[in-house]
Image 1: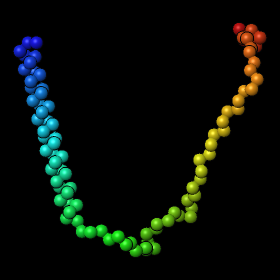
Image 2: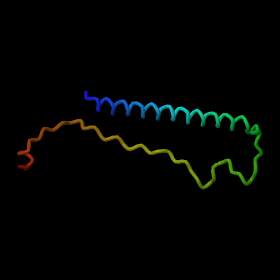
Image 3: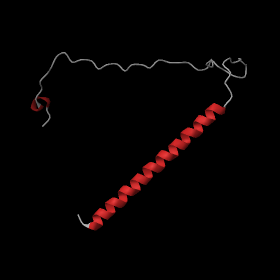
Image 4: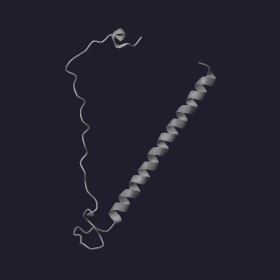
Length: 90
């Protein structure tokens, strides 16, 4: 290996290490922000009130239809050995 090749590889290794360390720092910051955001939120009410404006059921016009199975192909019970000359082909 020439000194130029070694210098290029060394540079690529340094760039890779810098990118990985920057990425780790970024995701740690995002994690910290999310943890702070979750702890700052108010507690969520567990009981919900039903309202006529909020539909929780399925509308009457929507029907669930089962998936139809495609018929399995019929099995051939009798095997016929036809030669091409007997069929008139060729």
